Amino acid sequence: MANVSIDVQPTPNPNALKFNLSVRVVEQGSKSYTSKEAAAESPLARRIFELDGVTSVFMLGNFVTVNKTGSASWDDLVPAITDILQSELG
Image (tube, rainbow, N blue to C red; front, side, top):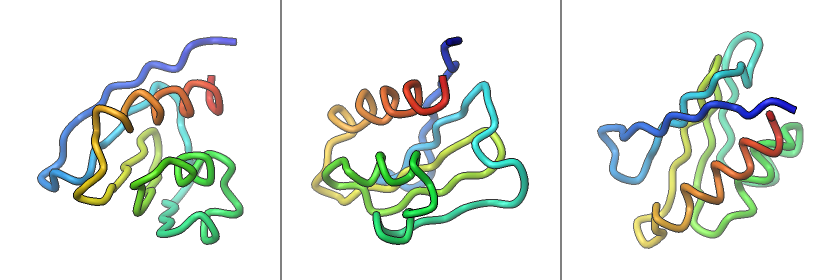
């Protein structure tokens, strides 16, 4: 199982981060989820929503953008999201 390369980039929104990946997460079009229930079709998005503070997940091509609540900490979320991406896509 190969490791997925992940490059985390800030966005203009301090409550959103872009996770650039070395593999595609969506073959065509984009996927946007605003709740765990809405993400039922996507095991990857569903797992990210299990983290406290996640408010939306957007996937396009080879990146995932995650939005969080203002009170959630990226220091807690980034390692957890990275672990999920590695385990789901690696």
